[in-house]
Picture 1: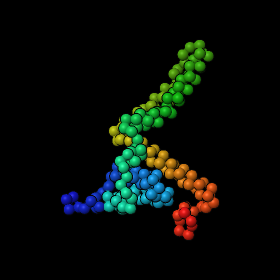
Picture 2 (picture 1 turned 30 degrees about the vertical axis):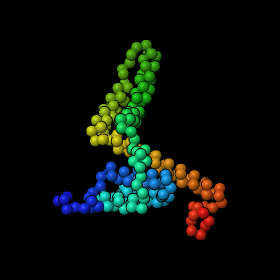
Picture 3 (picture 1 turned 45 degrees about the horizontal axis):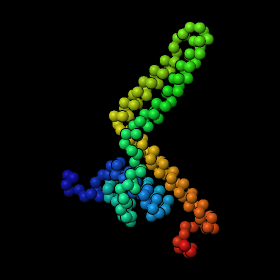
Length: 184
């Protein structure tokens, strides 16, 4: 059945959408797209269902070198460590604080009182352990890293837009240079 199907009719995967997002980001960095066009195309890229819809977003852009998109996807290996640290980062200090309170109470009493922090550590730890196993099995660290990279790219694009706006104000115009009707 797939033999008769054209490429532009085939369903695109998340990786394909992320590759297009990386190419759009590179085009924004090169000044080939303004922030409005980038945002619009980025939304269309993540909403695209077929290769044809994705290809339309890049037709007026030259090919972008492979390294330009590489910055969007985080390095392999570190993403799992970062995800695990983020997942467990609240548990460790909470258990440490409750254990310190238990220790101070035991010292004040002169003997080791019932270790009540277990009621904080055990249930929370069991939930986190379940989330860790399920997340690692489903590729959650990679998805989380890609989402954070995309959020960083959007933040950089917004900062770039703010910088352009400040430069335009400094020049005494709110229009981009070269806009019809304005000297550029």
